[in-house]
Figure: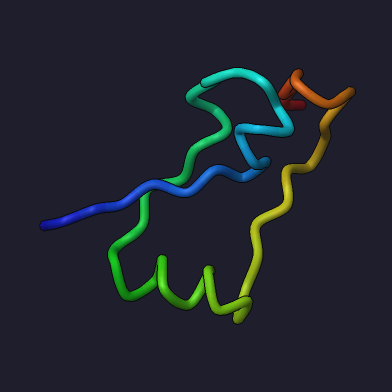
Amino acid sequence: MLLTVIDLIESGDSGNGDPRNGLALTPDVHWTFDAGLWTAIPKSVSRPGSLRTR
């Protein structure tokens, strides 16, 4: 199975390669994300460049 990865927060904005910022998707689901048909928003982001989970 082929998977692609999206950044939940654009890596240019977050400034790091934190693996918690990525989401693996199949190519067709990745296309729907890029087309704006759905989004993924983290529950909590304390500040740009720092991902935190609750």
